[in-house]
Image 1 (cartoon, rainbow, N blue to C red):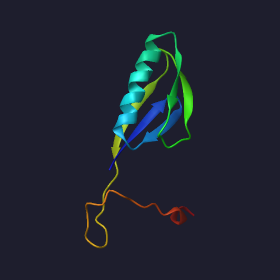
Image 2: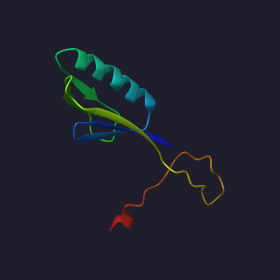
Image 3: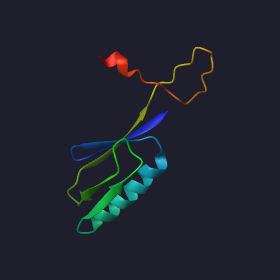
Image 4: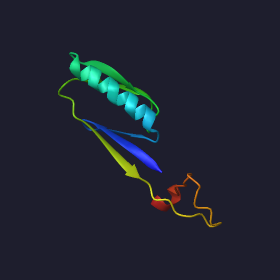
Length: 89
């Protein structure tokens, strides 16, 4: 499973679909070419928000692949994954 981490200055947003990332990239380019503009961010790991983007804003996009482990039933084609929050304690 692929995820996309978008870093905007000191903020990080995580997307699981490529389409919202491509749309975001287009809007960032438009805003940076203008005198600056607010760019909305939706469908990310954070609540929907807006960031102000100028030509000085640092934006980095990284692609990460989450490891896929075969399930106990031997079905390795399942794209879903589970995270055990209790294991953090």
